[in-house]
Image (cartoon, rainbow, N blue to C red; front, side, top):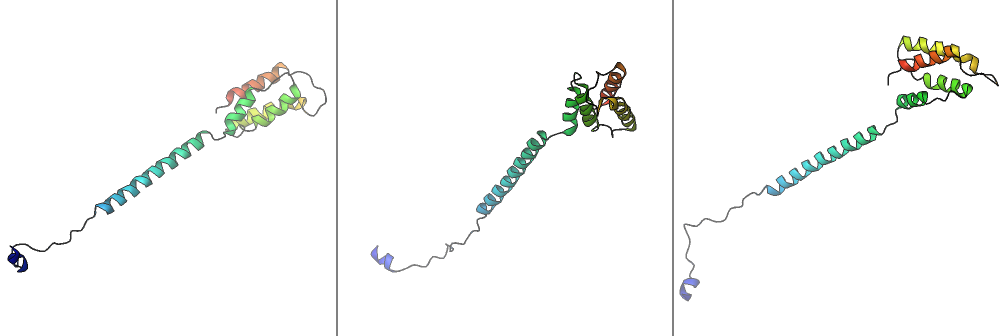
Length: 135
């Protein structure tokens, strides 16, 4: 047996090892990057959605304030109605006419030291304008 080990016998049936290209690492890295980009995109869209959901809407806030105006203090109410009502005056020509009509009725409650309570006609014009508003 020692004699066989010392003499090397050439092997004719066995071929040398060949190198096999292994791409599974590249596939894993590519798949990981794709999943990462998709996840980051999803997180960005979720962030934008939550940010826009809490966004300040001037029209909604002014509509709430317009409906919460206290008529017990007519002078302050006239100024508040003028300020908050101006947000909606450009919605249509009908809104603009109603707003100008309301301003004419509110004019006698502004720029004076002491004013009386709103009369029925002024209250009707105010309610008409508030009823026209769509938010």
